[in-house]
Image (cartoon, rainbow, N blue to C red; front, side):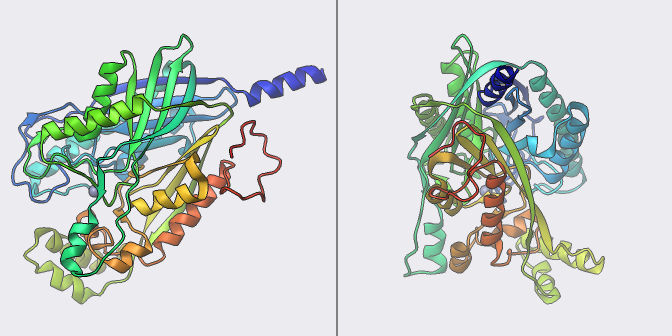
Length: 456
Ligand SMILES: [Zn+2]
């Protein structure tokens, strides 16, 4: 009997992973207003590259389960993911922390309501177009998750890191204008995390890879629906490895941009170089449990006066005027947003964990977790919904677009308070601890873990 118990325990510890994948084309009807560049003056009539949403379901045969949904979209919205999760939780018995949505942040895709309307498109026709797309997307994502969960098969999962060099810190340009003569740090994170899933017969099943860089290789003067460099990277992988599903994980790209950029040829070139890096990464087989956790915190906004919004409402900048008017209306209705929800997710697959953070997370966060956890944590941004930019105190002190000025494009009241960095770091640390992960060199609390592959 004891022998049987030990056998059962060891089977649990060396859990077999099973996985299922599914995809759905989410290319909008053209002509369509593309989201991300306020300067675009008309809808796009052509499709450069089809957009996809993809779902990967993994379970560990010991009760651990996760569904990772990726999409060639500028961002998911709270409305879209909340509704999809409500449906799939009821039907599949999933917990909220077992489903994560990651948007590539392409600036050449459609609007997803109810916040993502960063374009000059407005009025009843635009609203109908965006509403129709969002309602359809919710149904598609619902069916996509069901399809991935429907056909789980045994897989092995390996992970590793490689590099790609085309991202640079875009803040240098604006800081030279707003604070001339001063010098500032311009950190980048060129690391490319890779998760590779193979079928029992050795054939490729899925390849997940991430990068910290804005998908703005196609700029505001291009008018074609496209997944930008992440779309081309996924297409390159799927062309090179028949039968594989390639999925892009957006990382801490808030202040990162590709160079050179400005054409479809360059989007293809960066995509191909990223795909080649991901396919050639040296990998280590993952064993152990699949664990998930969610830490729900709130990020408070700095307070702003009615006078400031009155002045903004009169601005010649259409986005400033739109925000000013919206905030005055919110104040009048006593519905002024004081903070935003900020759910932090941790997904641990043996030795590697994905920390999924909502919003345009700046690269400082990736470098912080790299210093604290080494290569054990993949810091994903653009997760679940897009509340705005997530700066660090360093950026808030420097000022500028990512520090808080860009929040008007997200219809948020303004900058976050200077607590944002510590709130995000502390919440993340708690989420990682919930899946059994402690900072390097830390010993307290890690004793007694049943994980067979405690990582160094
Ligand atoms: Zn962005």
